[in-house]
Image 1 (spheres, rainbow, N blue to C red):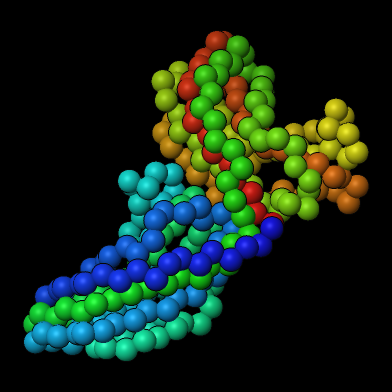
Image 2: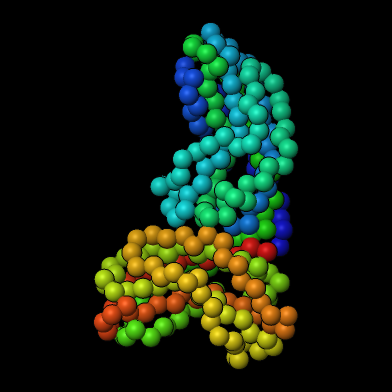
Length: 251
């Protein structure tokens, strides 16, 4: 399931008078599932001003919503000053993308010393990806008691496609005692006879959550797997919530 994502080369005119990095984004948000390595080509032309213009590839992630992102950061490569063209080594970003659901790339830019500078800057990104989003659903759920209930989120998939699951849950209009978590199961030869459910352990009760990468290891004789939301009441009967859930897989 490995694939290569190559973004188009995009040019922008950037202006700054700050010695603190500013960020300009050159890609759209994309799924972070299985995005382990990235390589950049950055070009700077027609730089001018009273100070040296400095650039560096940058990365930003979001756990659940792209309008509530994490703080941006430079991405591995050494920054360059003035005009020039550079290609980075292949940068391992798995520690950054593993806990998150979305990622985007851009340029951090600043002046090296007091003054003003501007330049034409382009960025092109090549990302090696081993995952994808496979399901997004909005579910009105009612848990009649403290037993566990399971609502499948994905279709059955061959186990060679999945080594890890990742899920986002957004809970709305929930009762105080509503609980949910990610679960998955395997089947050997027939999906009509699946095995027991496994789960992430921790329960979610409020807000917006991203599970991060969760390892799902099948037995050697298991061909099929699927993911579900497990939910229950923590104390009383007939608790409810509307849960928006999205599931990604990676190889």
